[in-house]
Length: 392
Image 1 (cartoon, rainbow, N blue to C red):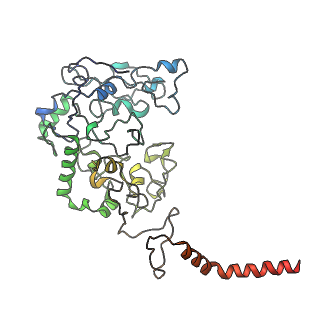
Image 2 (image 1 turned 180 degrees about the horizontal axis):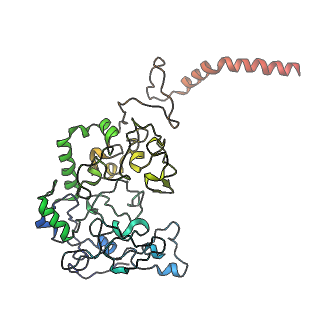
């Protein structure tokens, strides 16, 4: 059932829905002159910004909701899943911060002594107040592929990150953040306000590669991606996945060539489908398992082993060289010295048979090879079986 929304002012979300397909993404123009200009929202984005998890599911109250387990309902079922609708006031400030969490909010009961007037983020189930905030919702591209239904393979139909340039939207800024931008000057990587999402993402990556060409080498990416801390101040780096440096512990990656960990997730950190805080693992740096999704996707055993769905569907990928999936048919081969792990076979001996040509054996070739390898064994079995029958 389609919904019609009236145009809204600055006080509400971001200018109401729009049928226009153009959008300025995160990483586009962030100059003070343009960040306060609120762009009309696309109907789908407007619906999520305004209504996602803001009302209780009427079917759940009647014990009839079929999206409870696993929980994928558009509405909230329990109070700690409830999300407040974010708005920007006429003075340019948000009704609640997109970055600073409330210290009074009870994550179990979903209550705060300051109620809906609390100016800080409530850490709701799924962190929905932050992910679906005007400041962040759909302003960055998702690192996961799109399935055959057009949904995120990891987060499903409610993914808060963009799947394709058409799904990107412009971030809405708090006036105080704009004032910080004015003090610092034009944002790096800023482009024209009319840039498409794909163009802005490509321009940002090209800028990084021009400054550090070594990131064009897959072997260098495999060894160094997200292994060093970003030198920019917290929350001021707008590059997201395109930044090859980590910003927090969940974004960090141990170099697999310095720390010999397996491609399997650490059971202390990842429970069910969610990756938790790496500090939960007592093994810390010496743990033999992956602590973050980045560590697993960029592990030598997994990196570039699966085709990139974006490349297959659209012929381009917004992640560029920082994509963990294969963009070409030729399998990726690391030049780094390999190390044995329990989930990988041991390396072949230095001297041995020539490498496999990749061609399938013909039936007569397979039969000849079988006789060559197992002929003596079969002959011995025949003698023993024959002797047993004779003695019987």
